[in-house]
Length: 494
Figure: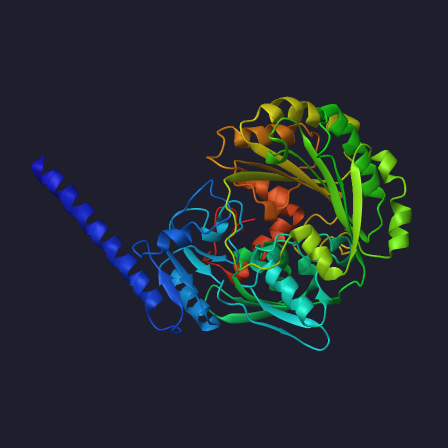
């Protein structure tokens, strides 16, 4: 018995020593060569914890095997080769806004390639703009405005990274005019699983180019996007209808949401239409908060004609509008574009849903029965943001990119959170119930609002639909050893 125990102990000791040697060799690989200003953080580094938790969502935490900060493309290539050599999952982090923390792996033990130091930018006389993926959306908006007053259809949070936002779609207020952000991409520079640098475009690596625009993180580290920018619209009208001065019942909010839907579905493409409802700190959580907001990209007299009856239809809301230029319109909906400060972090969870048909009265009623009871009793805060899709998004062919929901009429984002304090224990179950209240629904979701609780069968269908088979085929071709992997990455098997 003693001999057997001794043998087991020796075997365990040898295995532990081998694992330690492998870990040391992996770190040595990362630190060998590279540019002078690149940074490698390991769990023993003084700033490792700060970097590992530099994510918007604090509900969950994962501990990477290492976090690296390349300064040059050659650094990215070296780091990818090290991850592949030692079979460490490799992920990229551009802004740290992945709701499921896939930017730090979505699991322990990944190699995180944080591209935040790679922020070069250039723009040609024709408006073709090259952005390294360390640029955040606020950076992109500011640089385009400062260099010829150019525009792109991106999201509204300045701190969101351009890497993931572009790769998975990139919807924003201007999308009903100009499509998704990745619809404006003309080429991508990407480091592949073998460490080589490739260019993907409509004429080079065409299948890869298609996959990068919809599921990019599964195929490589995109270091640079090239965009076909647009002249910024000269007149931008920012509008809002708020109900902060009124305590609305759930039934009143339901009725107003039905009216909002009628307005949204009839709105011209040059109008973005957004609705936010929730139990938020704005009213101390005692009633349901409601706000409509959006942007009109056109003349003031046309806007006035379109909204002439809003005050009566949306009563008792306070309807206001302001005429801006493009930059003023961005600030009106996003706040300051500068991203040189510290962003607030929150413990949160999200789900999403694409409505392919108008929401019925029965669905609205079911939803607000849930929100009026479970929602107001919920020990935390929540909000539901609804965006009108269509327009420039729908004008692209269904398979133009790997984004699978060109036919969406509206997109819903459901979020539960806590400010301040720990995440409520029923925060996930509450949102599950709210989404169930909208049954029947097409089970279609937006991967930029990633939900880590979905099963493999669910997320493959809800995010990618019929595109998943082609995505998997491209994965086998460019990453046959599954170097770039995380819990919801495209798999080798379809």
